[in-house]
Length: 377
Ligand code: COA
Image (cartoon, rainbow, N blue to C red):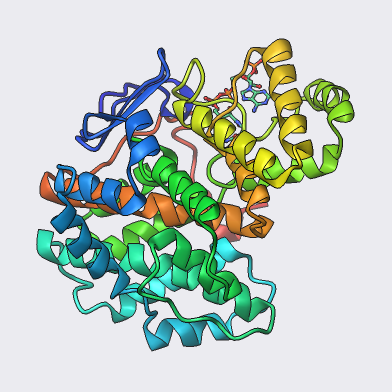
């Protein structure tokens, strides 16, 4: 940690860990996972392929990929304890809170829960990536009084999630769109949730504790919660013609427009470039571009009024809307992608650990005179 007292608020610009997983150039709007440009990965690789790259450092051969996909697909079933806990939760439990609880419970029954060895961590990481979608889909159906649908090991990671939600096997377009969004969500340096994971891991606590903290951080509207909030905003605006006035009013009220701005990018978030294109393609496929057009108008207005570009969450919202996904599953889907990155960072932290423990700049009172309870007025 290189911060000094009087460091910028929110640790902006502070280098707090070393990573070989991803690199972000905020000035030019570029992002690489393990040295590969995000544009190549998003265009041509599947989520499981990129996950393999992240954890093992190299893109898999076809044989390696098939084995890895088989491994993940075989671990999708939730432990019975986790199922039981999901059934016990109040039916109005928000999905991110349920997911946080489910992951914590997974840690209670994981055979390797207390080991931070590389092999144990890889096993836990595999189970987490495989089971997060099952937990999200199961809680979604339980909340609606419906029976959860078990995973289908023949389906891809993305297709299986959609199947567990609805019981229907998705078409290739929906499968590909969801899979690409997961590639784009997979990893992003020392964002707030990943930092939370690394802080927990740096105490030599375990993978599930770290990921539970990560989910807690991701839940907030300034981080992962922004994709759901962005869609809620578009639903409120309702119509492209109302977009400019709505944004002007929001800015005049001093409100943050969700899905815009970024701590690191000074130009367009390269992930947004893909999601905008996907949003446009899906709108064209559906023959209904009203939401996409409204989003474009919001984007143009934000650029015009504030010069602030959109981030990953903005067009992810319209993509998920096109896929007919429930609003409150947008942020859990972010977690379903990002858990691969969290796990990668926990492993990096455990492999070269030093306790993360910054200092606070003290701004309170000093040397106050102590008065015993019986003498206080
Ligand atoms: N809407 C309106 N104004 C915004 C804005 C947004 N989404 N994002 C930043 N700004 C403005 C701030 O009001 C501030 O203006 P000021 O200097 O006149 O006060 C300036 O830009 C700097 O913003 P700040 O919040 O200090 O930047 P940050 O680096 O601390 O925050 C975010 C980054 C992501 C938290 C912030 O952009 C935000 O809240 N965005 C909306 C939530 C979101 O989409 N989050 C997902 C991020 S991937």
